[in-house]
Image 1 (cartoon, rainbow, N blue to C red):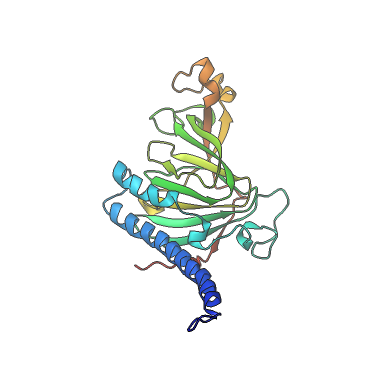
Image 2: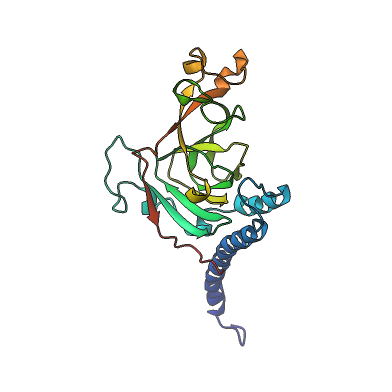
Length: 273
C-alpha cells in the first residue's frame, strides 16, 4: 500500500456522488418553478383581458414550460391523485368520470399557475376562456385534446334552433409527454376539452384568471355534428362539402353534474415571492 493512501477514500468519494446529483436535481426543480413564476410576473405585468402578450414574451414562458416535468413540481403517476380507487377520492359510481385534483401554485389578478391531476378516463369537458391567454403543459401521461374556435364573430346562438352556434375544430389529437406547451388565445383555439388516456398531469398558466365579477365566467358547451342542425335552419358561414367534418355546433350548458374538482395541497418547491 502506498504511503498516505486511505483505501476507503475511493469508497467515500463514490458514495458522495449520488447526494451531489440529488442536490443538483433538487436545485433544478426549485429553479424551474421559481423561474416560471418570476418570468410570468414580469411578462404579464401589463396584461389584462383580451391583451395578448407579445410573441417574445409568449416564447419566454413557453420555453420554460416546455422543459418541465412532473418531477419539477413534486408529482409522480403513482401518487393517490391519479388513482381514483384510493382513499384520497370519494367513491363514485362506475359510470361517473373520476374526480380531478387541482393544486394552486399561485394566483393573482394578472395570472394563475396551477396543476390538474387526472386519473385515467378523467374528463374536463369542453369550456371556454373569455379574454384569456392559456399555456397548458402536459407534465406526464397521455391525453386526448380537442380545441375549437367560433366560425363567426357574432354573439352566441345567433337566433339558431336550440341556441347552437357554429365552431371550427382546430385540434383533435392525442398528446403524450414530453411534448410542447399547448397555447390558447382570446381569439384562437379558445375552447378546449381534455380526456385522460392514462394517469396524467398538466400545468396551466392562465392570463388573466377566471373572474365572474369581471365577466370572465367559465362557460361549458355540448357539441353536435355539423349535419345535426345544418338542415334545420341553423345559420353560419358557408361550409364547403369537403370541410363539414371540421365543423360542429356548440350549445351552452350548465356545469356538468358529474364534473368534480377536488382542491389538493401543492407540495412541490415553494415560491419565493
